[in-house]
Length: 161
Figure 1 (cartoon, rainbow, N blue to C red):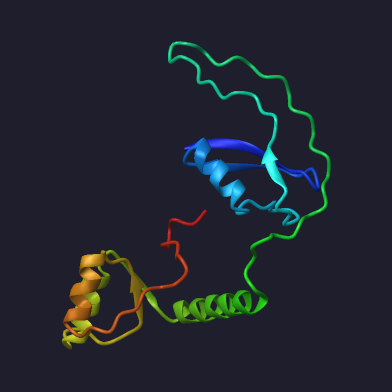
Figure 2 (cartoon, rainbow, N blue to C red):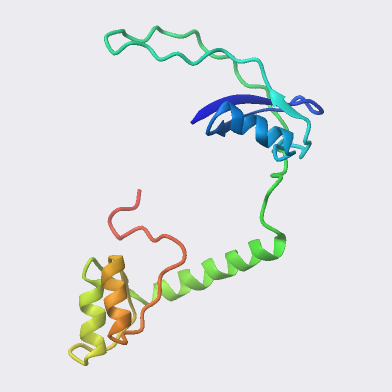
């Protein structure tokens, strides 16, 4: 991987770009695939940048001078943000998931064991959520146990900040 400081020629916006090689950068630039994330301009090129040379393992880092306080910039819209309909849908799904989790019990790593026991009538069927490996989830599905992934990550009880 190679990191280049890039600059929008139209608006002067600076940003970073990661490429597999210098040739990859040149190919993307020639194909018009590079755009400024702040204004969407395709007039993007390499900016002047200092070389990134790593220090030797036996050298201590040198103290750096304090960085200047950044100038307050007005927020720029994201060039590739979700369409409003998709963002609304994601928000609705997150709200539904949060409501469902309120009436569900966290069972942690014993999710597969609990789900299987409820499926076979060894335990009363109640809403649960927890963690299962991909193999455990496959086995549950193959046995006919109804399970579904939680779409948005859940922080286990006791692990939240």
